[in-house]
Image (cartoon, rainbow, N blue to C red; front, top):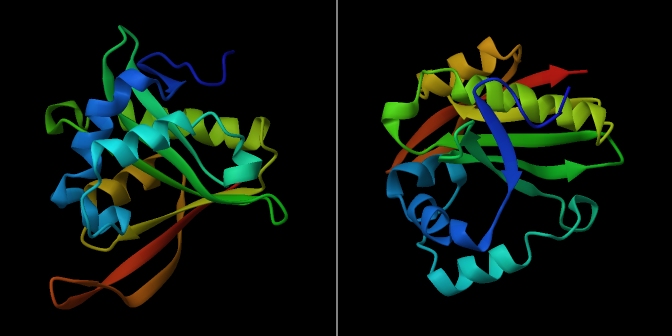
Length: 173
């Protein structure tokens, strides 16, 4: 079985051609809350990011992959970040860009593929995700993928002048 290929999607490394897609995602203000971003990114900065995306996860402590439909269309991104090889854990994040492609199983399969990769190839003991309590779709996604609710971080994120709770989901190998 290939680690990064499923029945619906496959995960691939970033390519220079992904600049426009990356620009769209990183500058979408609707996504800033989940990515802890508060400023737009220039094409120049994102191009530099793409040029350095080949660096080893042990060096830069993160890895972003493109989620692609089996036919090849890019659907979104899935990330490993806060990679901690000493404690054998990492955080995960996922975005399916077009709302029309959500709730079709792409995200769940991509998440399962990435978890398998983390456990099999990176030797991680656990992966986790931080999800806003009001992000119902993401909570369901992580729960369907086998993650359990490990903690509720009260008043964790200040969003538009109001504090919001954040839930930590974990999956232990």
